[in-house]
Length: 253
Ligand code: PEP
Image (cartoon, rainbow, N blue to C red; front, side, top):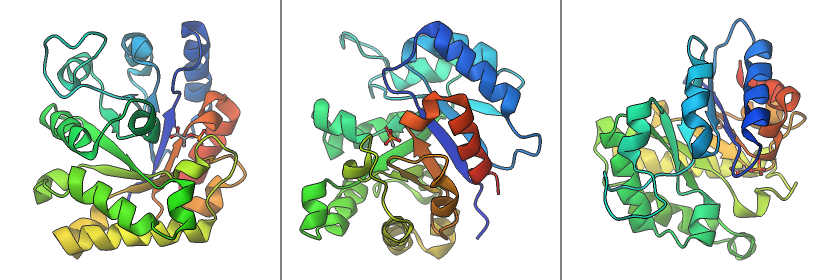
């Protein structure tokens, strides 16, 4: 199945406005002419308006790192999916493990965000993945299954087709420890099997499943060459133009 790969950058809470501008300029300057993958950039929300102007006329797509499901209201400090959509944001991360762990986000709350992102014509990048303790007990599949069931499996078939799943084992995020290509493929195949069970093979075959967790320029190609790995969600290595550009090259096959 030929799914268009995605190289997605998650800057998290990093870079000054000027550093972000420069990084985008360097990425635009270095992007391959024959771009066959999607390139998605999620800067801190405050940089999005400026970044959207910079990305005009390029193949790069702006993303939010988080959103609130309500359209508006008394939610101090929050930004709604509707607000992001109105300024031209195309993708929104949802369920990142840092949001789940540091801000206590539940599968139910993440489900509401997924709905809001879709209702506002953006693409959810739905993050899931287990902790080290769960993997050591070999409970990773049950854990990821529940994340999918409770936050995604209420969606209709035409909605799930728009979702991008990102498998991000928590033990690999920002740790320098990358899942082996075999570990990544095994979980991606399991996620696709779950999607097939719920939505059928044809739909499941269209859904992109990204890997995230200490992707670097030297491991991206082998990870992305696994049959069920459709690109990556990249944190640390996306903060440097040359390393992110080589990850884009790896996804550009
Ligand atoms: C992430 O934050 O989604 C991530 C995968 O980070 P890193 O690449 O730094 O592990």
